[in-house]
Image (cartoon, rainbow over all chains, first blue to last red; front, top):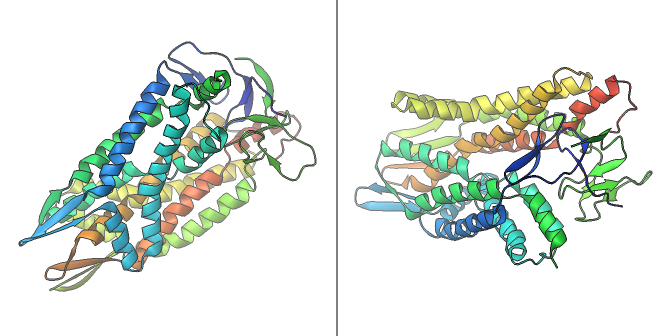
Length: 202
Length: 216
C-alpha cells in the first residue's frame, strides 16, 4: 500500500513530510542535509531542450572521427566506436566492453530516458512505463562518464603531440558540447516535479 | 517540514531506490516489489556490509597487478617498451606536462586508494556502532560517489592511444594486461560504493539512543 505525502531521505532514512516549494526553492533533509527535491520554474522545458540538443550531438559525436594522427603523409583517424573495436581486436574485450558501456551505451540511455519522460509530459501526457524508465535512469546514471572520457582524450592528445601532428576531429568538439549539454540537462532535471506533473496530467 | 518519526525503516516503510515511493512493509514477506515501478525494495541495501567488503577486498587484490603489470606496450624500431600506470605518469612529468602528470597520478593512483580507504573507514565505523559525526561521514560517502568515476581516466587514455598509434613503420601501441586489472579495480570500487548503504550510519545513532533496533 503506497503512502503519500511522506518522503524518506535516501541518505539517512529520516521520514519527513513533503511540502510545496516556492520557485527557486530546494528541500533539504532536516537531519543530514541531503537534497530531497527542488523547484525551479521551467525546469522541464530547460531540461528537455538540453536533452534533445545533446541527442543530436551524440549522433554527431559517434559518426565523425574524434582525433587523427598525421605522420609523414598518412592520416590515421578514429571514431569512438573504432577505438572500442581496436581494443576488441587486440583481445581486450572486457576493457572494450567497459569503454563502450560508459561512453556510448549509458550516456545514450540517460539522454533517451530523460527525453522519453519529459517529452510527453511537456504535452501533458503521462509516458507509459514512467516509473520503470525513471528507475532505469537512476541505475544508469552512475556509469555514464563522458566527462572523464574527454579528459582522457586530452591527456592522450598531449602524449601524442610529441611524436606527430595531432588533428582534432569534428567528434571532439561534439563530445565536448555533449558533455556540457548533458550536465545542463541533468542539472535541470527534477523528477519530483515530473511526478507532480504526471499526477495532474490526464 | 515536520518530522513524523525518526526513520522510514522504524516506521515500517520501504523507500524505493528507483522511483522514490514509500510503501508499507508487509511483515513476513521474503521479497517485496515497489507497487509503482516493480523494483525490489528493501529497508536497507541487501547485505550491504558483506557485499561492500567483498568488492573492496577484490579491488585491493587486483590493485597490485593493476599497478605492477604493464598497461601499455609500445613497439617501435627501437624495440619494445612496457609502461605501467606509474611509468606513464613519470613520462608525462619528464616530458614537461607536469600538470597532466599530476592529474593522471591523482586519478589513477590516489583516487582508487583513497576510495578504498574511505569505504573501509565507513564500514568499520558502522560495524563498530560509532555515533561520531554522522553528517561528515555521510558527506564523505557523497564525495566517494562523485569522485570514483575519475579513476577511469587512464583507461580512456589507453583506448585512444591504442586506436591511433598503429603505424607499423613508426610505432604500434597495444594495451597490456594491467589494463584489465585496472579496469576491474575501477569497476569494483564503484560497485563497492554503490553497495554501501549510508543509512546504516544513521541507524547506529538511533540504536544508541535506546530506540528499537532498525532492521538491516
